[in-house]
Length: 454
Image (tube, rainbow, N blue to C red; front, top):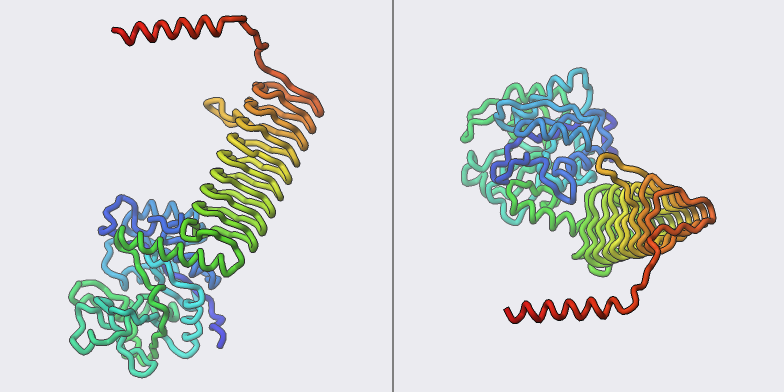
């Protein structure tokens, strides 16, 4: 069965204080897989191609809203103040839904593991029911709210605090995720009261109110691993382990070779092509893509970069934002690249820094080379032509251009442009002082001996 073609609005609740996190950072912004928790929720939801994205903010609203400008600029933010429960939070979206004719789905900014497939299953269930809740069956139901079912009909949801013994014996639990017609949902929310043990307006009252209004409600089940919410640092640690395990398994299934998967760490948006090889102890920060057949060697750190097919990076390399590594290029041990394009077949093999630069095809960068890109106030660019050879320990003081097939002598400090095919030598002339090393050595030995007697 296909999902309904009705437009969808996502309502993401991200207003919680997260006091158990013991942090000044709002809970939805704590990082998981190098991305804020709320980014995971939005990524799953936007896979359904919603027409509107509404995020309810509260605690730390300014920080959350500023982050959303980066990760989801299309989001409409609405502040919940005071925070009187989940039902009250969703009701704050009413104005943002004005004129919207379609379904609304409620998600949570601290629940990062719901999959697009599960959310799509809820939309399919909406074909036959007015309200759809998402449930799960944990090994230990604990203090979760219980879904009271009659066949496939959801009669009501009972919070653990308000449940009697029979209701607490139910093992089908509430995840909190809901899908319903947007107008219907807002109308039901206006009927909710706070007559419960917590004195809050519960979103979980919606199914019972729907039944009283002659509407139908149901619940579908998902894997309990999807329902994990983050409320403490310890839970965040466990969630990171779960996220990394899932990403490793996904990439191995997609044809990526990893020799020691448990030592490799990925970000939410890491993209790696088939037949790429990832050696142990590699860390992927945000915004990294690695194409098929590339090799990322051990102990390398990558963020904000692109590695093309057949390239080799590392070991012990660092690629910073703006690094573009061309096909079959080589970035070797203890090399750092930032905001620079390394063209096809170029080599930066060891102990070098290449920043704010362009390195042409097949150019060879000797050990210890530095593009001196910062003058204390502004950044400047270095351009190295195709087939150039940069001798070891060359300082390229930007802005400077090294021509095609040009060369620099080892130990040179280059401050002027080098024409195509030219050799640049910029270093002091060597002077040998006969016998001076022996005299100096003897003098220093005598000084050391005298000090040892004192």
